[in-house]
Structure formats: structure tokens, C-alpha cells
Image (cartoon, rainbow, N blue to C red; front, top):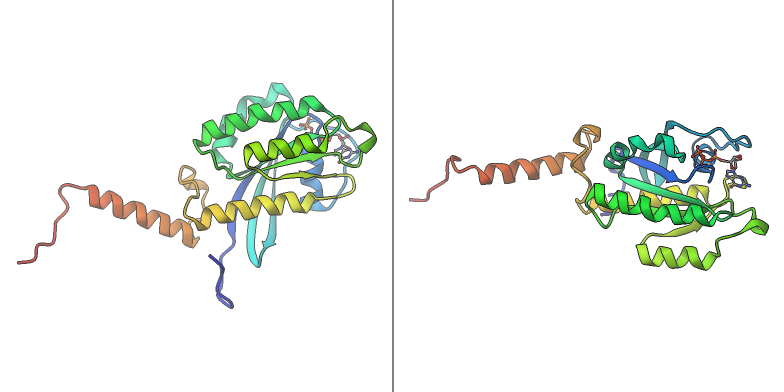
Length: 222
Ligand SMILES: Nc1nc2c(ncn2[C@@H]2O[C@H](COP(=O)(O)OP(=O)(O)OP(=O)(O)O)[C@@H](O)[C@H]2O)c(=O)[nH]1
């Protein structure tokens, strides 16, 4: 639904989870998007979260971005953040074929945990500036994108190519899902209780609970 001109729209808040193998550039992409900064050094992440506000098609969106650990020893928290996440950025490096292979397992896990085939997902082939070290052909990225029904971008955190674009695409998908009333109810506590969509969802839920109550007084027309 398009926002009405001149009418105040509260910012929608979404939880984004950045996933992918170790060293593919998850932290660098996040740092470029949130702070406009490039990080040359490699310091494996345990788990970091960031807040960013963006305007998407004239609507204010607040993103809570979780930059996750790619290294195996930190994967125990995965179930929890997959449950909380509403949009997922699946990152691999175009210089590593195995980093793309890893994404399939992550996607399966997201779909299983969310119990939803249409979870907002963007596939990101990072380190596109390292064309001479490319191991993943562009066509492979696009064919996976078609199979999964998720957009594919080649990006570079180093040159800030397509960095904003991947996050904005994810925002659009989450907004569309939310507008269609398909936002996730399971993380109720995480939702902005002042948002209109949250209020509508709760009202609909209360109504259907009330309708199912066998002791509910019924109106009889005499
Ligand atoms: N050339 C190039 N190097 C990059 C790019 N993105 C990240 N790097 C480098 O790759 C290394 C790893 O980047 P990180 O962002 O820390 O990778 P990560 O996926 O967060 O790694 P984990 O925290 O272990 O999961 C760093 O040395 C970065 O400077 C890119 O787009 N181009």
C-alpha cells in the first residue's frame, strides 16, 4: 500500500541478519552501509549488532542489523537469530566457490526455522573488485537466484559498489511482506508496539480468538 501524501508514517523497524562463511566480508559490508567506512583488517566476528535508519521509497525504516560469525565455533546462536530475523543477507565471496556452497545450508535452515518459503532474502556475491581472483561465475549466482527466488547482487565492500542496494532491496521485501499482513508474529516482543501494522495484526488476532470462544455472548435478533 502506498503511503498517503503528507500523512505521518511511523518508522517501521526490521531485524536483518547478515550470514555467510568466515571472511567473505559480512562485517565490511555492514560497516560500509552503517558508517560509510572501509575496514582493511580481518578480525573474526563473534556477533555485533548495529542500528541504521534509511528512507525507502519515501518511507522511514529502522534496521537492527546483526552481523553474525562465519566461523563454525560461534554457530550455536544461529537458531535464535534466525527466529528473530525478518530479512536475511546471504553473503559469499566471488573468490571462493565453497563460500557459495555454504549458503544453501543456511537458506534451508532459515526456511525450516521460519517455516516460510518466502522469507525476504538477498544473495550477495561480495569482493567483486577482485575480478582477477573470481572463482564463481556471475551466471552461477544468477541461476541460484532464480532457483531460490531471491535477488542476486555482486557487490564490493571495498569500493562500496551495490552495498546500499542490497540492504535497500531487503527493506523493500520486508516492507512488502509487512504491508501484505504477512509479517512475523512470533517475535511479538521485538515488534514496534506503536506501529499500525502491529496494532492491526493484534486486533485481528484478538477478534479471531474471541470468535472461537464458545461462551461468548451472542447477539440474537428476535
Ligand atoms: N578486496 C576486498 N576485500 C574485502 C571485501 N570485503 C571484505 N574484504 C576483506 O576480507 C576480510 C574479511 O572481511 P570481514 O568483513 O571481516 O569478513 P566477515 O565475513 O565478517 O568474517 P567473519 O567475521 O569471520 O565471519 C578483511 O580483510 C576485509 O578487508 C571486498 O569487497 N573486497
